[in-house]
Length: 348
Ligand SMILES: [Zn+2]
Image (cartoon, rainbow, N blue to C red):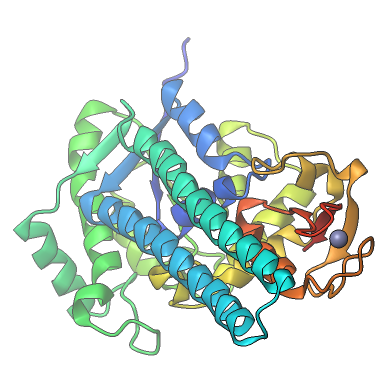
């Protein structure tokens, strides 16, 4: 007898989605979004996408990249104005030229990364197995009521959210998913619901092990099984047979932790520490394969971001290195001395 097919309906929260998109930017090898796309294409997964989550993801991405660009521009502009204050010399002309070049390249690089990240995200949004849920007055009402009743996953006031409007997004999203299950049930007799969320408000305690009772109670009559994962890697491995090594799981956690440590910072701009910490564990092989690298690391001498003098010509290249170092998010690690063109790799 043929076993009845159990459809896997997945909800991925904004923060998890953004972690995966950031990981994509850094060109790590986890390829979470690609693997999600693969499962969607193979009809193994249906991704429920409430409209408010879709909008939130796009807004966070746009703000994050925009803010990062601004932050880096301000820092390089500071280096430039300090250089201008110094005595005018042939040396400072060369340094200014290299600082302006770094600024142009890094800004252009961030724009490019934004466009390619948005493209991957939109490809997922447009997949045939996305179950979109339009934001309606009714769902906003249901979400608001849920938040007023302090039912999970409502956001307690202790957190960084400042307005009621922002506070209720989790409840609106959950009510949207809940509301869609009836229709999904008509389509697929047998389905299980998988939540991929790392927001502790979805769970019974801070350990994030057990989905909150209120959430389970609302769902249990509507589907055959309910599961929750905080890491998309664990979800892909356990539910979709995509294998990840322990090291890869740790890489993802490091990234997620550093974003979490910035609390609300993510929502107005990516943390600069994000990439710094997750890249710090990489070896040279990985660095040289990054998109903006123009040469292999083997021919380049490794220096740190606070190196002062060129090891070949002895010129002070401190501010040029500092400026170029800001491009770490884009993998712009190779650095050429603006005086003698000696090639270096800037260690992160
Ligand atoms: Zn030099």
